[in-house]
Image (cartoon, rainbow, N blue to C red; front, side):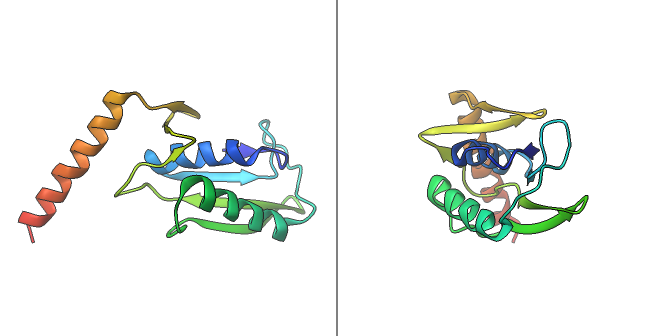
Length: 130
């Protein structure tokens, strides 16, 4: 997903949570919705700010989340790689998000229940197949 460098920390956190809760994904900060590179004037500071936002909003130690500076069309952008979460659901401000197509949507209670049931079943399968 492309994000303008002025995108709010909360918006980036919601998109990140939706990706972590679904199949993972990549956020490119410094590229607008049309795919045009806008760049970031201070990519090191932006990396630091994004890491703080994700750490604080998602209550995670970052683990396998990768935040790095990339050069695209001679402009600096920040790339955020988000793996699919295998153990927990991530929330922002008390709401869980899921990725549907190219958008984030709040998870329904039914989807949240299905997530935990499938993770519990997978845990049992792993335990008994060891």
